[in-house]
Length: 378
Ligand SMILES: [Zn+2]
Image (cartoon, rainbow, N blue to C red):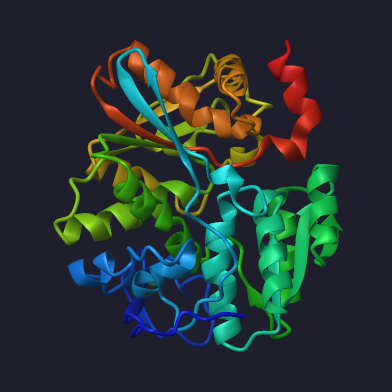
């Protein structure tokens, strides 16, 4: 395994998002004792950010100067391609993050999480996931020689289960709702393993923040960044990355936009937006989360940037998905949610002509090819 060892790791602090108490980085902690999620702040400045731009390095390994890690395994994650399309006078730049090695942006968060667990000496990690996060963690465990136990709902699609097994993870199917799955994972982690569920785990967001760094390097100004929001790991990662860049006076903060699916829009509700008449989405399974732990935090950063929330229904998601597939962009239905939101916002003028918009495309359509074909050819 190659290690990026030519830099001094940044210092960082971990603080409770709610009560503000500082906690020590060791032992591994995924939630504050008061019940609230934790945030990690990395000491980053202009020089550290500039030193990430190294032509001889590719992928997350080059972000060593701004990540809360002391050693970075090279596992070919990140630096995904861009594709810009003009939509009614708006430049929409798609970040093709579904082209990461396990087929989703979750590889970024899994990378920082698993690398940190390896540094702390864990030989076993436990996660609860119904899909892409489990696959990404399984792959990182395989790469780093860490045992991975995944607790998942019985309803998890077979394609994703097969991938997790293929990547050497131990699967535990739990009957009952998502909270029962969570409880089973926590019980299993009591025996010396690290619990790394991405709804809570603060390291995950430092993996997803690299999306903001890459977009900053590749785009000539970003007016809006639109993310699909379930647990909010893309949106909060973008916010973290953009905030670090803005604090170093390298970027004007883009407006962040939350895109949620009808029936699963708690962050939009927090922002005062509802669509009670719309049917509950069945297409956006990747973000079908009724009560994400960081919902208030997500709503607060959206408001702080002057952004907004948008709720899209299955008809809009299917339209957006067909548009993407016709351009050779093979993503899962959940990944069409932010583009559906962008189309709506362009139509109603919330995103004006002449704007530059970042849309991360989160997950590959190849894990759900049958479903995708059915929608795209309807
Ligand atoms: Zn607290």
